[in-house]
Length: 228
Image (tube, rainbow, N blue to C red; front, top):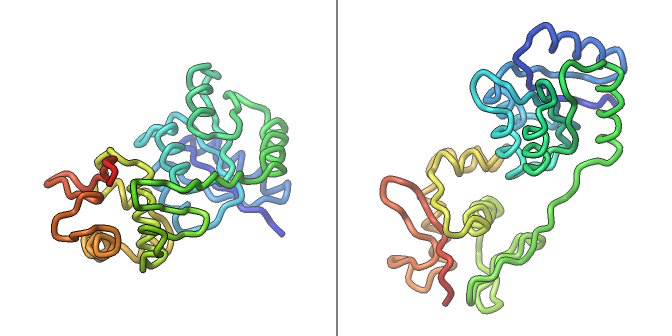
């Protein structure tokens, strides 16, 4: 089965060279010349690995890595100009699996790519988040109040988990949409507000006076750290 690689690289000549070399080695390679195009492609397709340049014309590659890692565990090999040590350190801290300084030999790129593919994606630990009487169980995809399961759709649970895992941080609607992908993104394109209302109906004692999932006017939503 052919493995599909996403290459996010703005250098057209380098991208074409990598595509040809990996293609001759049995891989299928899709090229995105900007960070945003790369993120858009990743939302619509399943890739086995991502080759990510740090120096991109729109979004910094490190930021692209951060956004990807918020919801996705596809192996990432970062391409760093001149092998800047700080870029390498930050990239690995953000969740990249490996890095390769430019200029590089195609054979080394192939070897490192095969190495991260052998390791495969690492599933994140989805611990139970607890906020007083509310438990959010990522493994079971279930929210519970006093042990009673809340009636949430899978998409609504994902939205709740995104907010609760960043408790105390205001998330704009645009940030929330960036953290959602695939079918979930389509499910929320009509109105995040409607889904928030339905979540509140399940987790709040008084949905009209929410204490957990709070609207920050003009900014977005924040999941409160306060306990019951």
